[in-house]
Length: 245
Image 1: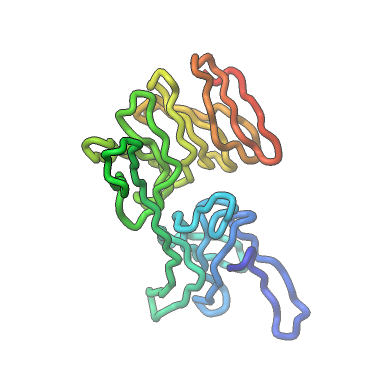
Image 2: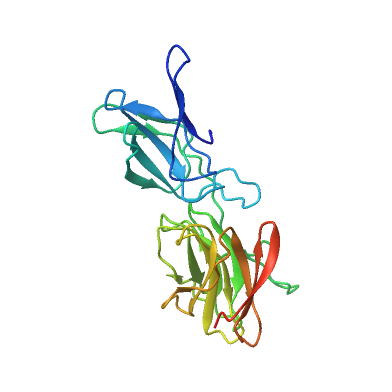
């Protein structure tokens, strides 16, 4: 993986960077198409994804882009569910790419001495299901998942196994939290640019941004009384946001 694209003339005299839409993200290797005026490459959904040890987010969604090196204009060709490190043109209208897929599913274990020692699966598949959080009433498990193509917040019923999508946005939605009254959902999303804290009704409806950190607001925790105070982590410091109700 590379962190940026650079254009170099054969004699080494002309050297310039091609501006990419994701700052700080790791890109796939590029390939030329349309003569020598366009390149195709893959980018992650957000900065820092692909092989990020802090987020362990290998396998999250990305986009394959076509960029004109003269104008800088960018067009999304299609979305990929897992990262790609190499893309090649395979004839007119076709590309071939690898897929750096990692699966992550949820498994439930019981502390009962008579329960099966291996637990049981709550989710299965080729997606990355992570960050599980039990709802206060114990009726469902909230988690982030790439199973829909984008990284969104989902929930699963431990009893029935029914899955339901709570957020649906091309951006990354993760770090889910349910308030103690079981009435509101909080999470972190980069849908407005950088990661900020969002809240919505319990079913994900009426979403609204409540933080304006401007950098990297993640891992929200709401006060038990739901009085409008949200604590979240922001690199390099943690902060508290008032008036979130």
